[in-house]
Image (cartoon, rainbow, N blue to C red; front, side, top):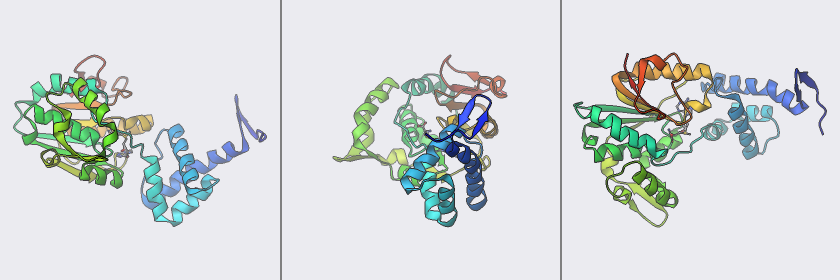
Length: 287
Ligand SMILES: C[S@@+](CC[C@H](N)C(=O)[O-])C[C@H]1O[C@@H](n2cnc3c(N)ncnc32)[C@H](O)[C@@H]1O
């Protein structure tokens, strides 16, 4: 058992933990200074878990050793970025959200001559294609331009390719129906034994681009912004920055979709949006 070396009120830190508390801010600073990626306002517990995973995958014992490799080897930074991106996503993830979008937002979007939609933190695009399917079934896809952005270029490339493993398609089919799907999910892709590829008409309105919510500015005015399951990895200061960026990017009357674990409650933005359905994270900008 390592000897506790420092006592901060009630918590005994092991020597390794105490050293890591020194190393982690240095790693964040090194990544920022060398590559411009600013993870300093990411939630610390989840960041630390990811750093440990990166150390494990690189076969390194200390955060300092990881920092050394990242600083001197850009390929290691690319791998680190991959580990830091929690890239889990799913088609029609949280089906009630898509049902609410279809029932509550779509009727209000029908009169718009064109629709600009931004998926911020879109991972490999499962939710981008999900919304494209809803828009298609509601007759809105042809007048939509969908911007799908993420910090991780590798994920964007996967989304652009529109190829997904076939193994979860049964589960996604259930979610599609729960989300109010009007046809068959299988109409939207062609399948081979291992994978599916989304149909061209769904891919056509989507623009894939790198965008970092920490440091990049707004780039358009949108009618819909979905930023789901991204801000849960940020601390409060960064959440406020992103909420401001989204607010500045949304037209009055535009819609904001957040993830199930995210909310506008107790933020400076609460009074500037209306909740469309109690319990659902779909909001309309009112002021
Ligand atoms: C858990 S996934 C969410 C994917 C999708 N929005 C969903 O709800 O299924 C989080 C995504 O946020 C992206 N991300 C993390 N930090 C980001 C940042 N600073 N700017 C843009 N995207 C970021 C990650 O790369 C990852 O793809």
